[in-house]
Amino acid sequence: MTVELEHCRASVDSGGSEETLLRLSMDELDFVDSVPRPKGARSQGRVTVVAVFVCAIMVGAIVLVSTRWQSARKFGPCGQILVRRFESYTGLGSEYGVFLRAAALSAEMGWTVVPVTTDWIYGDLDNFFVPPLYGCTLPADLLDDVSTYKEFGTEGWERADRLRLTRNFHQLLHLDGLIRNRSIDADGMRRLDMKQRLWSLDDEHLTLPYGESVPHGVDKAFLEQADALKRLWVPNARMQAQIDRLATRVGLDEARSTRRPVVAVQVRLGDKKTELGDLQRVGSHMRLYASTPVPRSSVNLTDARSDDMNVYFQAIQVAIGRLYEADLTPGAFPRPSKRYGSSQYP
Image (cartoon, rainbow, N blue to C red; front, side, top):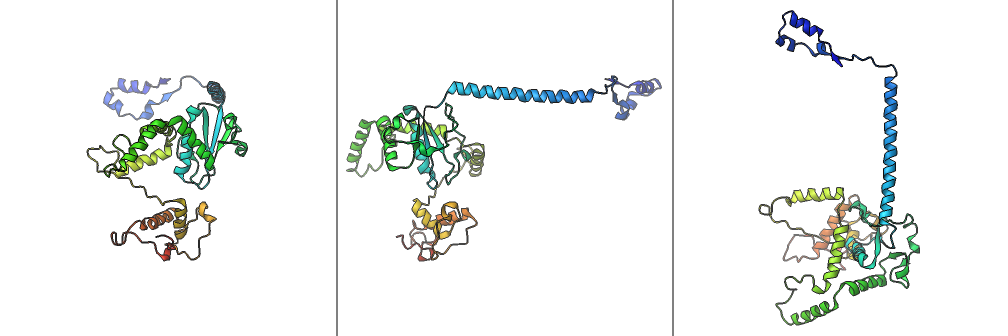
């Protein structure tokens, strides 16, 4: 590349100053290509770009296949697999608690616990948490027909390659039995029982002493479940963004010495059966309740079928109203009445 400066030199030779040259437009200092471009250069350039692009794709595919092969070779196939299918209409704590107890025994039992939440009312766990890493390769046909798997806790389950864990009462008892036998210190629990019997005679001992919120006999079981929870309860990017936004709104990102106290309050609707009754009174179109006919005698607080969140808020209002005495909190919350179909409650 060269610069046409003949006009500039002529200006200087004719007495033009450097200041005059500075005021020249950039059009007078255009860059020109001193090397003529071949006629087929543009076509050759396109071919080169396409060739490089194809090579990049091939290299990427080779790297991906190699990585997966090395990963499968490194981890190997999973051994015994325990599939935990979350039931459609059961609550978060209840379903996740069963899954967590099974996952806490993974190292002890040598099994891999796989949650299946495709039919769960709360949605897929991947909507909230980072998908877990199993440290082994799951078979491709794992979820093709889970109904054929050996039920956990039934005869011969120890020798089965694939198990399924349900909410069957006997299966849950068997799971708790494994935890009790492998992770709970029987002597420590006996000492706790003796302490509690003695404390029952003394009005000053209404709670466990400092440092024994987790009784010493269940230390191992508690730590196993805590470790499993730390490993599995990892919010994904979308959920973490909501958590961070909420923390900012309530001031949790401020220094402890300067921020005001932050109190978190969880308002439960209560037992699922009670919750269903509250929701029936205010109306909901969620799929859980869509098939449940709302009694004609019940009167909705509002026509809230188009707003599930509004339905829940109103159901909470009704539930909280049962906890308050009118003479202590007059007008704070509406008391359940026959108008809401709540005469069945005390």
